[in-house]
Length: 77
Image 1 (cartoon, helix red, strand yellow):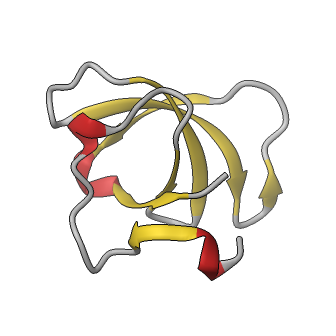
Image 2 (tube, helix red, strand yellow):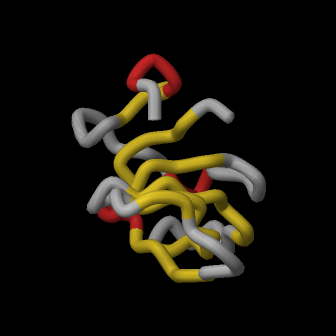
């Protein structure tokens, strides 16, 4: 990931996850790049598809729940 692609956050600011839309990319704790697939807008959880981990791109569909404190930043596509 290019650091210039980060829109805000990176751990320095809170990301209001209830405002995230499906299709947006986020950086999660542990260096994970993910795409929002569903947002119940409860401010607590989002459903994401892992795109990349520190080990490299993720093959296949890896769908996970991510908590508000796991989301560090929004990322430009």
